[in-house]
Image 1 (cartoon, rainbow, N blue to C red):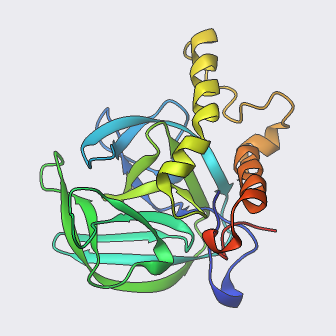
Image 2 (tube, rainbow, N blue to C red):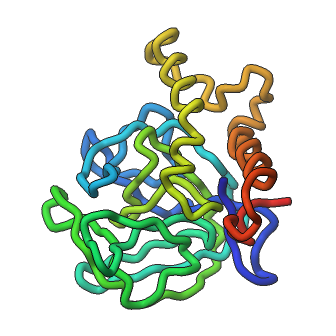
Length: 239
């Protein structure tokens, strides 16, 4: 489930982060989102906001440059971070009453004054940082929606969900459980092999490496059938 954009500048389909976005690796150093390969372990967080490393499984959406996308730019000053993500993508903010449980919200709903979770000094904990500025920016570096086993990921040192379209991170993570199970079984049957990231034997090579993942499309179709339309972001998915 992934899509970007706003108004006439928005493209018909898209990912969640630009190709220039950066993630932290367990083995040390960083990597561009666009260069992730299945098996990479990237910095993420659990439901309580505790940092951990999680396996990158696949791209739920993958659009190569020079595809143009409009991204929301979420900026903090202390510490200074700058995250670009698409309108329907989920970002975690701290609730006003209870700051212990990160709450998912659409990027298009984030406003100055919201508290987001960013990587603290030393990279050992998450800190709450006040959103200083929210703007729109068009980029042509591609669009990518990485999925981790944990369902979360730190991009440009900001905690985000791997999901989009529906403002219920837990529901989305539950819906992807069969995909994660299939990935685990494949890893058990063929240790060290990541040659089939699409988990679809009938998929053509080009289908497994570009565009919206077949599993995301399937969930979106089911969601449109069983959920009220108000629960889905209007810019959630290409028609």
